[in-house]
Each structure stands twice: as structure tokens, then as C-alpha cells.
Length: 558
Image 1 (spheres, one colour):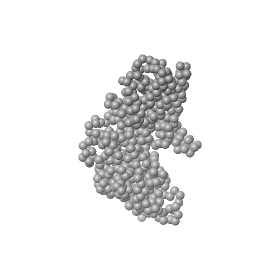
Image 2 (image 1 turned 180 degrees about the vertical axis):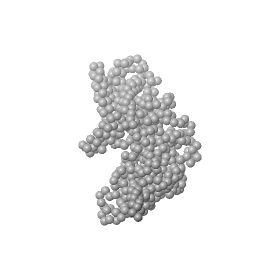
Image 3 (image 1 turned 90 degrees about the vertical axis):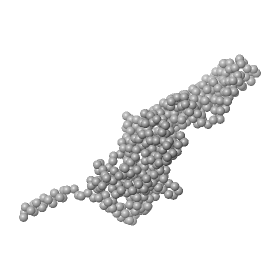
Image 4 (image 1 turned 45 degrees about the vertical axis):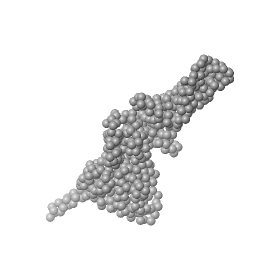
């Protein structure tokens, strides 16, 4: 009898040290929701500072999802009617919690800032889960969809892989996680706030190529006309989509509830049925349903099991050698001044290379625009001063045309002519911008020289020199006399160089636009741009002042 007692004691002890049976996600979710509801019913809980967001959802009887309204099949709006996969997912989540969904429109650039500002509770907005965003938001696991970025363009355009897009402009949306990868392959970016405008930009040939999720373009390839004109060139960056909440302690219980709910929705086919109802591809969700029916995944700890959940896309960019010092400097500025300084162009190698190249190209553009302005001023001034009708009238016609044309139109025409004569390259774009800026400002300065010539001839009462181009002496005096106007248009040429980004010239404004398409810190970035051009213009003004003094000295000596 004593032996049996010993055996029973040993068995009981062994059973006590065994891990407890895993709880189902359904039971864990029910307990979590019940506890939060009970807490919301406690007097004063709803008005407490930093109230838990799940508790607040029950206090206010609402959940605030951030959703897109211009993304076919996933999030669209016509009047007050919203539809799409993401919309229905957000509704299913709110229904499971027993609260009302209150939607807020977001896009790729605004969704994370709106979450950080507590203007939404959860992002359900086609957001890919990558390692860069992991530090900004708390992603819900498991993921509720998956896609890859696809490059779309005209069927006749020969583009098959990365080498084929070098030097080309690709239309993208701000905040798209794949923008950095596109930039790293020497493509230029044209940025838009909403993905929904991209197909229209392709159709009217504003964009030759566009990059966006394949799930987005699937809707448009249903249209016979679109499918006849365009095709998917290649895809890259396959990424799982995740709902996301703020990375704060007050959001952790909401995140936990959404983790458990996502497990249940994948296992039971809720996401799958929503996808079918919205004509969204279902292969990913069908594979995930199999995964989350497995015993080792169908537990309350399944969302933390690496064998069950998908990893985030590795989107970490190569850091610069001095990134630690940059971060330390940002922290020091924050501590000393309270200013939240961000210097993304100094933290990663793609951004740093863009930044350096942008500065160099901007300086080349400024020097080139100044030289071209002076050259065209002299040439057009001499031609307009000529007594030969064959020189004078064409020069005046060119001047009047340039003075009447918007600078952007002149840039576009110069770029079109340059690209018709030469294959596209950064050098060609910069050269076209230099010519356009030189012509625009040089024509005005040339007119000032011609008017000075006319005044000098009137003062003398006769035209010294032979028929045709005026004598060198008289022309030199006219240039000296019009020094103020020439200097004014030289400064104007320097100030106008940022507009060259409009035709794809890779100067600093264009480079920083590319950087902000995949990095944060827009306010600081464009503030630095302003400082750069202020310094450049100040230097140009100083040099032009020296040049003007030299011309005026020559005039006084003459």
C-alpha cells in the first residue's frame, strides 16, 4: 500500500511540472474582451489619463480604423458608401468587439502619423509589414493579406528587369515601402498621394511606368482597354500586409485582441470569405487557413510562434558609417531645444548618395545656368543690336517668345527636344535645364543690352561701325551700361534652378523628394533645402555684385 502511495505521489508531482494545456485563441479573446468591458464599466475608468485603447473602445462604443478610399477592391468610397476588402475586414473586427467602426481616410504617407497622433486606433490600409516600419508601429500577427510591388507600363516598352528602368521615371505613391529599392536602381520617381491616380497617369502618358501593389493593378487589368495597352513588366518585394496599432503601452491589449482575432479569422475562413466577396485573390488566404488550423498554431500563443507567422520583409537600408553620430546629434538637439530634428539623408547609404549627388548636380546646374544666361545675353544682345534685319528680327522674335512663355513650358520643350536628340540621362536633363534657364533669363538681359546700344547710338547721333554687327567698343559699353539688369537676371537664373526637377534633372530638390518618398523627416529635409538655396543665392549675389562693380568700373574708365 505504501508503494502505491509513493507511485501516486510521483505521478502527481510529474503532472504538476507539465506545462498547462494551451488555451484556444477563442477562449483567450473572450477573456480579454470580458476583462476590458468590465474595466470600462468601473466609474472613472473612461476618463482616466492614458486610458487603455481597448477599454476606451468599449467606453466610446467605437473603433477608429484608418482606411483608404481610393484603392479599388480594397478601399473605395462613393458618396457615403464605402466598400472593399480592408473596409469589410475593419467592420468584421469592430463587430467581433461589439462596437461601431468610425472610419478615417488615410493614405500611404498619412496613416502612421495619424496613428501616432491618436486620431485613429488601428491601420487597416494595405500596409506592408517590413522591418523599417517595425520600429514605427506594432504590427498585428498573423497577417491578413500579402502582395508584391509590380512595375506596369505600355506593352510596346521593352522593360523586363531592373537594368531596364535605369534613368527612367517611375510613378509611385509617397510612403510606399518599395520606393527606396526603385531609387537604388537609378530610376527617378514621380510622386502622387493616392494610388488611384496611377492608371489615369499611365493612360494619358504622364507616366511611362508606374509601380504599385499587384493587388491594386489586378482591378485595372480586368478592363479590356487597359489590359490591351499595358502589362506587368516585373515584380519584386513580396510583403505580408498587417493591421497595425500604436507602439505604446496603452495599445498593447488592443493589439493582443487583434492578434487573437486574426488567428480566428484566418482559421475559420472569415478573411477568405471577405476576399471572395470583394473579388480579391484568395491563394494567400487559402494557404494561411491551412496553417492556422494546425494544432501548434491554433493556440493562444500561435501569433508568437515563428513556425506559424510570416516574417516581415527585410527592408533595412545600408546605414552610413556616421549614422550613430547623426542619431546622437538628433537626440542632443531634442534634449537641448525640444525640436524633433530628423536627418534621414544622413542615415542610410541610398539617401546619402542621393543627397550628395543632388548637391553636386545643383551646383553644376547653378554654374551652368549662370554661364548660359551670360552667353545668351551677349549673343541675343548683339543680334538685336545688329543693323542686319536677318539677325535683328529673328533675335527679337526669339526674345518675345521666351518672355511670353511660362518657364515650366520652356523647360518641358527644351527637355523634349533634348530627349528627341539624345537618349535620356541625368546629364541630358541637366543640360536641357541649363539651356532653358539660360534662354529665359539671357533673352531679358540681351534685351537690356540692345536697349543700351540704342541709347548710346542716339547719344552719339550716328552709328559708329560697319553695317551688321556693332563694333566691339560700342557693344562693350552697352554691356557695361546694362550691368544692373544683367546681374538681376543672373540672380534670377540661380534662384530658378530648383524648377529643373520638373523635367527630371536630378538636382537637390528632386533628390530630397526621392528621399522623403521612403524616409521620414520631411519638415527638416525641406528646411535644409531652403537653407542650401539661400546660401547659394547669397553667394551668387555676392559674386554678381563683384561682376557688376567690374563692369561699372570699365564703364567709368571708358
